[in-house]
Image 1: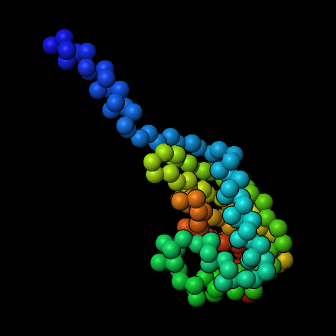
Image 2: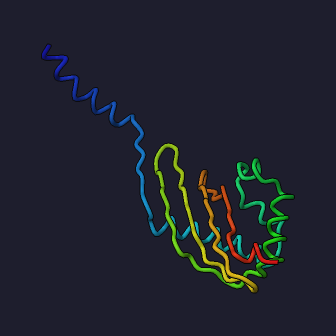
Length: 148
């Protein structure tokens, strides 16, 4: 019995060392910066109406719901009714980062976008997996979309 008790701490130590731990972080500034960089690159292409190049920012799961033709229609309608992107600022943001065996970061950004005809609120949901940040969802909301 004494031998078993003396081996127990060693076994417990080995079990703890062999386990992989995940840590979770909420709203870290460094995560925000990575998300901001992805959005800035996306908007630079959007400002130039380089639609095809924006596709690389979207996750394959996005295109399971909205194909590229539909995305182009959304871009066209948005530019036609709201105008060109002039600038934007981040109204709200949230991030959740999991570091460990299966790292990933979830991002949500709500932006106020100044366009040449109407302002819009644009929401991005991003996901970082394998060091790539991709858009999972993208929403544009503006009263200008409903004006003739």
